[in-house]
Length: 306
Ligand SMILES: Cc1cc2nc3c(=O)[nH]c(=O)nc-3n(C[C@H](O)[C@H](O)[C@H](O)COP(=O)(O)O)c2cc1C
Image (cartoon, rainbow, N blue to C red; front, side, top):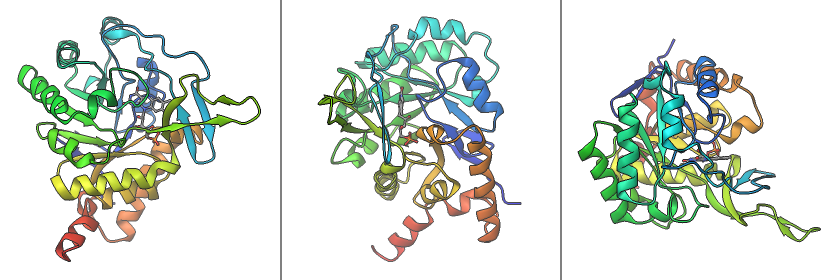
């Protein structure tokens, strides 16, 4: 049987299927459930300096090809988070997602996360619907670079930089993330939903983030462009619901994938379905390990001078 273990930065993962930030990961209990159901790793809901309630409803709206959400980064704040995870047994397989409005906030959060016994952070530089944080910070190439460099300088954490697709040049953001251990591509795409009879917006915040199957081609393009230009370790995310989707991301350069909105259509079996499918694909296509297919389509294109 082919090996589906993988490595993202220095993090060796038994399998490449990771729970994305913001879905079924609000509590330590739900995170453990994903890990025990077969996830290789999980990313927590994004945590900020202080507790936030998020936006009033409606915060989620289903569309034919996915989901619109503007939940507004509800989270317990770093103090409560640290308290809840004091005796958590799976700190090495849990990546803590953090968001902030400045370099100092990101550094403060990172140091707290490290002091709490975790060794990996995912930087939410990409949430598209909250003022002053997320993609508002993450569109600024210089700020992205400074945030990552300062966290590297002041902690020993591994850094995953989660980038926004809501820019024309995601490769510049990837290059600004040079000191990150990995790039996570992509967060949701800015979008609006309209209710024609009430003539209201589908989300209380008007603008939200679009996720699910409809955004997969956009995520694949981001992975392709960034892998071709930087060769960095990439975690692919956006619209993955099946093992075939996951393979597409690996072929374009992702070393692992995250699954989020798929849980709208499926249950925890999704982890084993994707893992089994990857395994069978590698066996039937004559590959002995996952690593053998990472980026092969990009490398091929480069060889042909595309
Ligand atoms: C309801 C919801 C909440 C989310 N919350 C976060 C979050 O707190 N931090 C973050 O970085 N991404 C968040 N995301 C984005 C996902 O992690 C992921 O990048 C995006 O949904 C695309 O993947 P998918 O199509 O598999 O869902 C959220 C997505 C959804 C649908």
